[in-house]
Amino acid sequence: MHTTRRDFVRLSAALTAMLPLTKVFGKGAGPAPVKPVVISTWNHGVAANVEAWKVLSAGGRALDAVEAGVRVPEADPKVTSVGLGGLPDRDGKVTLDACIMDDRAGCGSVAFLEHIVHPISVARMVMEKTPHVMLVGEGALHFALENGFKKENLLLEESEAAWKEWLKKSEYKPVVNWENHDTIGMVALDQKGNLSGACTTSGMAFKLHGRVGDSPIIGAGLYVDNEVGAATSTGVGEEVIRICGSHLVVELMRQNYSPEEACKEAVTRIVKRQPEKSKEIQVGFLALNKNGEHGAYCLQKGFEYAVTQGNGEKLYLTSKSYY
Ligand code: ASP
Image (tube, rainbow, N blue to C red; front, side, top):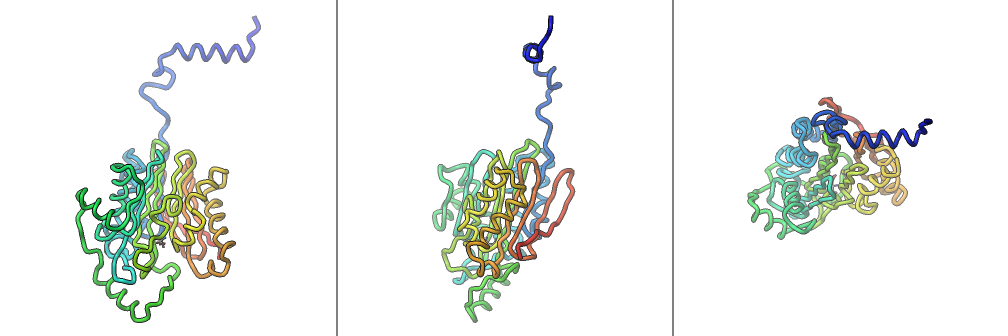
């Protein structure tokens, strides 16, 4: 009897169905592990990646990795743009913004939060313990204290001195690539092939009291879609919010843009909308796709990012820039 290809496929399917699964895939074997990767903004990303990598290399969740990673600059008093030691607003208050997003579209965020060293962990708690996505100001502080976070003074001597110096002229003019604005944004892919991201900052130094930037806004400072990829941003948050930056980058990757091309298109959109202003400010995007490919693009030269991937290989890369 002549066996057609279709018959053969049917027969193989029937035989396969009769075999115990362990025989088909090998004993206890699931899908092959993915090579994990973590990327994050600026040079404080290097130390942050070390902590994230401990989780990823042990087979942990990308969500745990990004939280552990960004907690490093949050607690580092020398990093003046994140958490403890962050530069204050023009009233001398350190107010923090952070958000986190996992592989199941879970997200949590805090904004305009004072006195808490680890806003990222409060954001995670908002995600996991409340029916909400975002808590701000007094409410966010109250929630954090109720959940065991400690109230601390985040304004350290050096930042206070910088603020007093600033007060002499009181001129609000963000300086490109200076640590008056260096958010840590981190996105990671774990061995199971799942993506997550975290973003945390003290925001633009000497901002108006109450100002909130892009960093705690899901879709602006951070976005994760576990089918496609993840993106995060740094720089003048107002410009990122205007284009829903990180969401835009992820949607472009959905349309098969590479991570770098997607970041470039988002940056180009900022330029097209405000060509003159775009020459004077910094905005940078970082992106990671589901295959572990990464890329970045920024407005002005000088934006750098840290990559830890594969078997622990570490890179510190300079992003391409529009200008
Ligand atoms: N995006 C942050 C903000 O606007 C600051 C930065 O990353 O440079 O608050």
